[in-house]
View 1 (cartoon, rainbow, N blue to C red):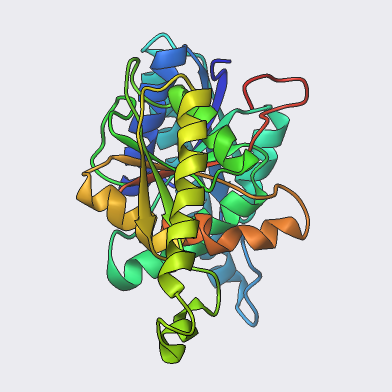
View 2: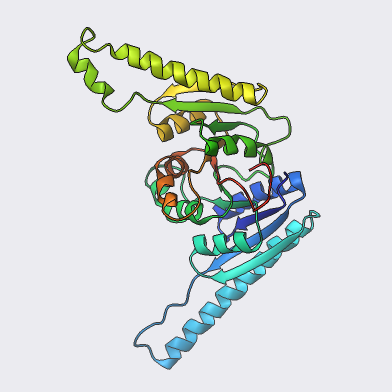
Length: 303
């Protein structure tokens, strides 16, 4: 099922402009509607100021609002000039909440946001908006890194743990990549907890290599089944290590421009469990990351 509505988060910064370019590229692929969503900062009360200063603060705030509105209107006109349907939503509130509400109200298929860090400490600080947006979103979330390209992705890497969530991720990849793109798939495997202790007992008492071979054989069997179910067309690479690290390392080695991961849970307490892989991947990846939440709306297909 093609994408019909895309929410593009815009704080009028360079990273959000880069994300908007990707959103436009995907929208052009589907002739989808783009809704620019801008979260306005709340005007906190200022204590113990005279009326003159309060008036000046009000004038500054009004000028900022006017500038934001003008720049959003310019972006809206540019999108409409491409023959795409577009709209603007500007509301006061935390960005993740404003984006999630807009996605719900617009029955959006995808939220696209930029990041404000690509390495080191800056990557760690990303979590405040991107990861909370992933937790609250009612639909898939694309976190964009890299150059401003008005195009779909061309080198996707799909992470799978052979779960239903990962299967949905595989199904949703065609929505954001160029037609005919062949994806790569990676599965991160680890030895069972406690296996490390087998080396202390020695190979004679505990043949830990047997456990390793069994884990690998099981993973390979699941990989073969996955490929067969999708009619071939891709290969599943088996990589040992913690999932988020193995996924991001594989993407960097393969020079992928997109990592796709499934979210395990969409509501309530289960959202908190998402963080272990999806959020860590978003935080540390060198490229864009698509987090797939599953069905886009009740009654939709392909989710």
